[in-house]
Image (cartoon, rainbow, N blue to C red; front, top):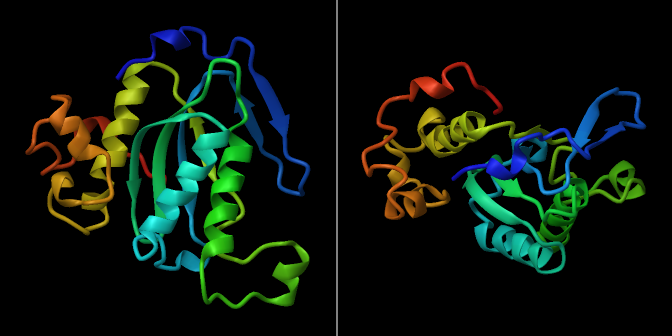
Length: 195
């Protein structure tokens, strides 16, 4: 868990502006480490119910568009993840779009309005997502902790180790967290709120 390779995270970066009415910018850094949040439309409780389909969607994208998942938590209506992109690639937007597309296209039983059909959408996901370029080791640690504490924050469990859909227990096995970590909110994440 370290990002020594990102000593100057804005070197060789690309800033892209949105072409929609909403004006926002996204920072694209080859080999970047990013924190993401994406949320279901209308906050439908579907991710946990269809966890195998979501996992398969990730595997399918990772097979053709390499990246590593450094940390992840999947809750019923949203997920948080930290990804590391290949050194010559900065295109996380296509990866996110494909994960959403594969998941949505295989999800059974959702009625789609004509307006969504016209936009080639099923209304499973919110259109936007939150992304944050990790800047240094402290920033990385804060986001690891935020991800792993999230099931406790949302009152699904009392301890991070009890949430099945998280990378937390993998890091306990590797000795990066103690088994009882997160029984109280870590001070390093106080005030962070991405969902």
